[in-house]
Structures are given as structure tokens and as C-alpha cells.
Length: 243
Image 1 (cartoon, one colour):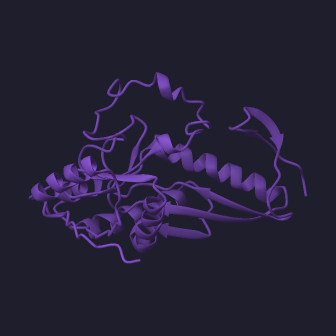
Image 2 (cartoon, rainbow, N blue to C red; image 1 turned 135 degrees about the horizontal axis):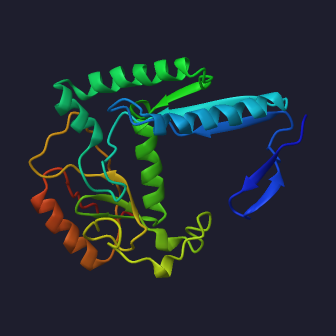
Image 3 (tube, helix red, strand yellow; image 1 turned 60 degrees about the vertical axis):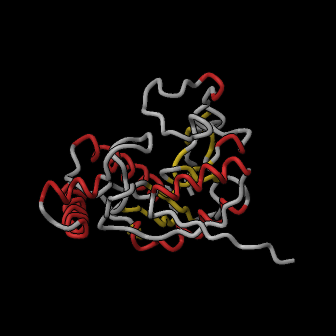
């Protein structure tokens, strides 16, 4: 096996790669949101991933490569605001969201072939794993790392003392709203959405229901009841504790 030196984001140093297995390496790379064609800047990312994977293979590793396809619910803004990209693509082309996702998934795969990019071993579509996503969010919420506000379920980054260490973020120095829109009700500027709730009066083509055993303070509960009264997509069911 040929030794490979990589840059460790956590330590900010070049280090010899130490895989979990002696001869196998699991490799995940993020795929596209399939609401439009990939442009040259997008494709540069996949070329880099392909070169990296080929290096692993050349070094003698058995590589298992997984790539996701985001075919649902990605907003136009990274600040958890804006339009749903899939809905936007469907409105632009007068097609269903499912048709748009299928068309641009195939277009992306053709681009990869034209660029001689090795396909992943596993194509992982977001819509094929909604159940697992809901279960993971429920588990996060159960351990107190998530909270519910008017437009969705959010991860509470303040519960992680070392949040942002990979990017070496100065959490205390971040100013909410300095670069992106602020979602009303977020506890911390770095908190992010795990599950978005459809706005009142809006019907999306792709919708799933997540049930959360939410707990919080009395004040937060009263706020949540106000949200539920305005949004028919939120239903509160009170259950008595049974010892």
C-alpha cells in the first residue's frame, strides 16, 4: 500500500492517511441539487473528487464511493431562507418536481460521463431516505439538541462546546445578519434547520410529516402554540406522562 499524505482540516497539518481498514477506504462526496444543469464551477468539484479517488485507487485501496443526489427541499439561500430550488425549477419548466429531479439527475450523470469521471459505487437520493432522516432528527431532538420554531426544527449549536472547530470559527465574534438573512426565533446565529415546516397556505409537491416528542420551557411551549395556531402544518398533541 502506497502511503498518502493529506491535509488534516482539524490539525491544520499534512499527515499520513490512516484509514480504519488496512486496504479499504470509504469515500463520501456531496452531489448536486438537481433543479438545473450543473455549470463549469459545479463540475470542477466533481473533477477534484474524481482525481482524489483515483489517487486512492492507485495507492492500492479498495474504494467504496457514495454520492448523494439532493432531489428535495434545498432552499436558494444557505441561511435557511428563500425559495425551494426544486419548486422553483418545476415552476420554470412547467413540470412536476419529480420530473425535474429525474431529468437533471440524468443530465448530471451524462456530464460525468463526458468528463470521464468515475461513477460512485452508490447513488444516494435524498427522497429514498426520508424515513431515516426523520428518525435521525427525532434522535437528535430526544437528546435535547434541537428545538422547534415557527418555520422548522433547528439544531442548537450552543450544545456543542467545540462547534465550528473544523473551520476555526470565532462563534462569539459572529454577528447575526451581517451576511445572511436572520430566521426569526433562532437561538444562535450558527443554528441550522433540520426540518422545514411548510408556510401556511402553501402546498409543496414534496411533503413528508415528522413527529417530534418536543420538550422545552413553558415560555417556549406558549410560543409554539402560537405558531401552531397560525400554521395548519403544525399539530400539537399533549400526552400525559405515564410512570
